[in-house]
Length: 135
Image 1 (cartoon, rainbow, N blue to C red):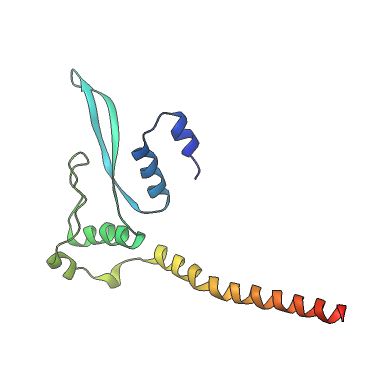
Image 2: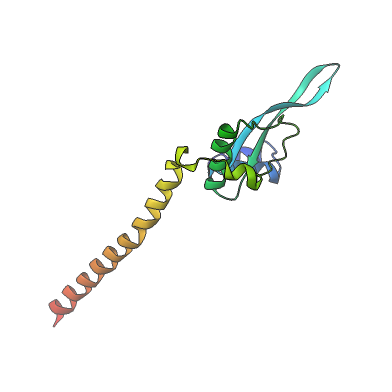
């Protein structure tokens, strides 16, 4: 995964590397930045907060659904990454959400068996050709 070696050389923790991987896979939503360490009122260290989900579909539902429900993320330092209640989910209009990011993966996955069938068929034709040529 691009950037992992850089993260290791910068001394990033295992959790930070896992976050990087999950974010690169499109599983995380950026919540915001907060001051994690200050001295005399001066921020010395800032951290970015993310909510990560088990699938892109879950992330998309959260991002788009929160906009529909006018339910913004909490403050980055205190966000709990909770899902929707049943009542909130029932108010979502899924037809107004852009799922093209997920559709692209489904389309790619659906093409794979066809490509395998073509490759297998091609391999069989090559083997048949050589079998006839040697007889």
